[in-house]
Amino acid sequence: MKDWIKFIHSPVTCSRACVIVACVSLLIVTGCSGSGDDDTNNEDTTIGALTSLGPLPNPSLTEAPSADDEPIPEPGIFNTASPLQLVRNPGPRIPQPIEVELTDADFAAGPLPAIVSIPDDLDPANNAAPRFENLNDVEVVAGELLEVLYKPVDDDGDLPGMFPEELPVGGSFDDNLDGTKTFRWQPLQMDVGINEFTVTALDFRNNQYRTTRTIRIKVTLPEDPSSIPNVAPTLDPFVPHTVRRNDPVVLELKGIDLNGTLATLELLSDLPGSSFVQHPRFEEIYTLQFTPTTVGPLDIDVLVRDTVDTSLTSIGTVTVDVLAESDFNRNGQRLRDLAAARNIKFGFAALPFFYHRPDGGIYAAIAAEEFNLVSPESSMKMATVNPFPGRYEFADVDNLVAYAKQNDIEVHGHPIVWHRQVPDWILNAEPTSLQGHMREYIVRLMNRYKDDVKLWDVVNEPIGDNGGYRESVWYKGMGERYLDIAFQQAREQDPEATLVLNDFDIAINGPKADTLFNMIDSLQARNIPLDAIGFQLHVFTSFDQFEEVRSNFQKVADRDLDIYITELDVALNGEDGFDKQAQVYRSIVEICLEQPRCKAIQTWGFTDQYSFREVFTPLFFGKDYQPKPAYTAIQNALEN
Ligand code: 9MR
Image (tube, rainbow, N blue to C red; front, side, top):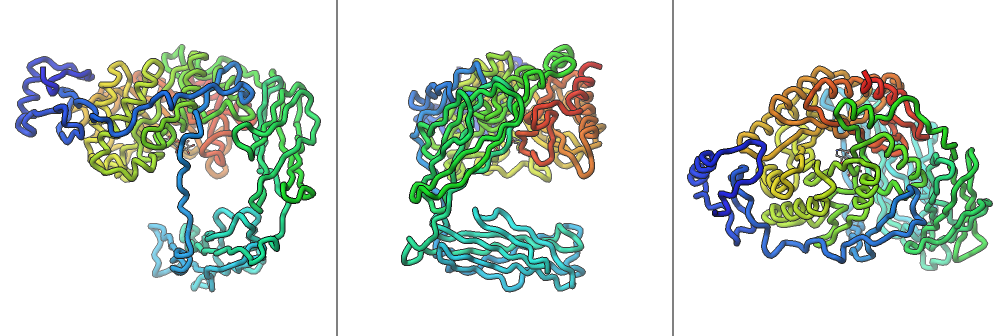
C-alpha cells in the first residue's frame, strides 16, 4: 500500500470506498502523490485524515532528544514538597541567549519619537494629546547624580497625570507637587552603557489618551573608576510566604551590589536545625533550609556584606508566616471527589518549579487533595522545552508528571503549538522549514510523555483577536494548513490521545466564536482529527454572558466534540468582592455540569500567591492558602 492511502485514526470512520473517492479528488488537485521518502518538506496542501503526513524530515532538521538532555537527580535538600524525588536539567550546556544591548550608535541616532495612544472613541480634533516639555536624552558619569525634570503639558490647559515604567535600581521618581516630577538616579558601575527610561503622560479627561516618551541615558565610566562611591549591597526583596509547620522550607536568597561585585550573605537569626550555604551551582545565591516547628510569623534577618569593602553591610529581613497543620483543614469534600461523583475532572495549572518554592510543601499538599487533572502552566512551552535546536529541558515537566502519578492526577499537556513562548531559533527559521520543525517537535514532545499524557492542547490560540486566523509564526510558515498538519501529526503520534484546540474569548459571541465554528466545520469536513475544544475563561467578576457560554458549549457539543474549561480564573473588577467572584465561579461550574460533553474544569492556578493576574486576586485560595468564598461556591455547585 502506498503511503498516501494509509488509513490513520480519525474521529470519522471511513469505508474503503470513501478512501478511494477521496483519492480520486486528491488526484485531481495534487495527483494524489502524497509523500515520498524525499518529500521531507511536505509541500502538500491537501491534507485529510485519509492520507498520512508521510515520513518526518530525513535527515532530521534538528537533533532529537538524546542522553545529553536527560535530567539528572537533584539532591533532596532543595525540595520543599516531599515525598518527591526531583530531577534537574543537566547543565550548564545551553549557550546563554545573547542580550541585545543598546550601543553608542543607538544613542547617537537621537531621541526616540513619542508614542501617542488614541482611544477609538476620542476625536483628537477636540482634545489635544498630552506631551512632555523639554525632554531629551542625557549623558551622565557613573557615580554622579542625574536629575531629569518631567513636565507634562496639555494644550487644552488641563494638567496631565504621569507614571513611569520600571525604575532603574536605586532610582526614584519624585513628585514636586506642582504638576512636575523629577527622575533622580545615581548610576553605578553596573549601569555603564546605554539605558532607557520610559514615562507615560495621561490626558486629564480621558486617561486612555496617552503619550509615552522613552529617553536614553548614556552612562560612562569616570577617568578614575575608584572615584565611584561604593554602596552597601542589599538583599534582593523577598515576597512573604505562608508555610505549614513541619514542612521543609527552602529559601533562595541573593544580595544585590550596584557596584557589580558579588555580595556575601550571613544568617543573623537563630534558626535551630537550619543550614545556610552558598548554592552549589549559583554563587550569587544562598540557600537557607529549615523546618519550622512553631507557629507564627517568622522574621529572618540576613546580613549582606560587600566583598570589596567588607565593612559595608546592610541587613535584610525575610518573612514567612508559619501556620499549624490544622489551619489548612477545609470543610466539606475535596473538589476532585465531588467532581468525580459528577463524572468530570477538576484540575489546575501547576506553577513551574512549585517544589522549589518556600511554600512548596503546602502547595503540593493542597493540589494533591483537591485536583485530579493538571496542566503545566509554563514548563511545557516550546521556548522552555526546546530553547535551542537539538537541546531539550524536560526536568520540570518530568517532575510534574512524577508528582501527578504519585497523587493519581492526570496530566493535560499544554501547549504544543502556540504563537507565544516560541524559541528565537524558530522565529528566525526559514519559513519553508517550519512545517518540518513543527512536526519534529510534536513527535518528540508527545513521544516523551506518551505513557503519561493522554490529553493535549495541540494548537493553542489559533484565532486572531478580531477573528480569522492568528498570524502566528506557524501560520506565516504554512498558512491555514498548519492546523491540519499539527492535529494530524498528533493523531499519528498517539491515536488514543484526546486532541484539543484551546483558545480564549470563544465562549462569548463575537468574531472569535464565529471563527471557531467555521474552523471546526472546515477541519471536520476534511476529517482532520480534533476531539475537543478548550475554553480558557480568564474572566472578570463583571462577567455575565453565561447564556452565550451555554449556547457556545452546545454548538461545540452539536459538532460531536468534547468541552474542556481549561484556564478558568475570575479577576476582581472595581469594587467587587469575593462573594461576587464566588457567584461567577459557581455559574461557570454549573454550566459545565449541565452540559454532558463538558469533561473537565481547570482553574489557572489555585492560590492568589501565584497567578499571572495576581493583582486581581482571581483564584479561589488566598495567598495564605485559605479557601475563599469561591471555594465553597464551587463545592456547592458540584454537590447540587
Ligand atoms: O500563566 C502563564 C504565565 O505565567 C506565562 O508568563 C505566560 C507566557 O508563557 O503564559 C501564561 O499562561 C497562558 C497560557 O499558557 C495560554 N493561555 C493564556 C495564559 C495566560 O496568558
